Length: 207
Image 1 (spheres, one colour):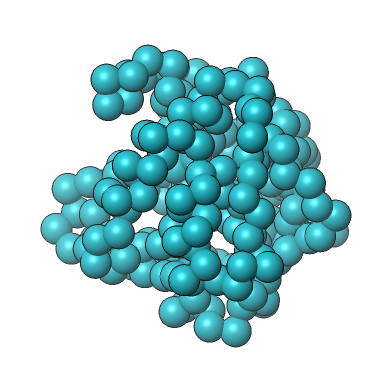
Image 2: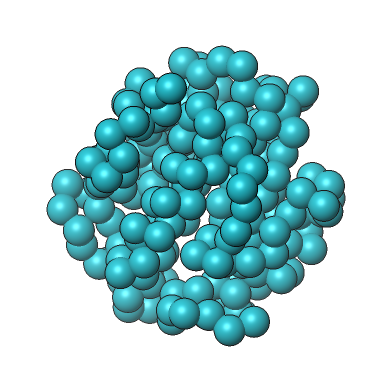
């Protein structure tokens, strides 16, 4: 598969394979259950969910415990991760492709992206935003590293692979129909359910 950016190649390749191995702990699963119970507490009527950059499905697995009647869909760039995803959601619901190349006319009650926008080439963010907004008919949950202005941060010894900014704010400016209804922060020192210093924003699409 040919990709447009270095960042996509990075996650589709060996580094993405190694991430699969680091992304399977029971502690992470427990923390995810706590995280989504808070982040989705102001949402209702979610029967279908699509996650962009789902990896092996740890987020969807946690949400499935909270919303067991919801149908899960996923977009995942890494082949190895997409293969593992089949253990958590039906293979027919998995798109093994880049967010930037994803094409679908379907709409879901919730679009989810967690720890993914930070790894997308900044020049391509508007494309990613469009995919997220177009895919939801109700809610969009964004959970990323926040910074009020764009900044690049070294990531595990690599440069130009992690970027912080106000993703939710940019989406709301580009798409006025997306309204903020809740937000929060999860600290990596949380004694019970740590996350990786994630700031989350729940947006609702006005009809």
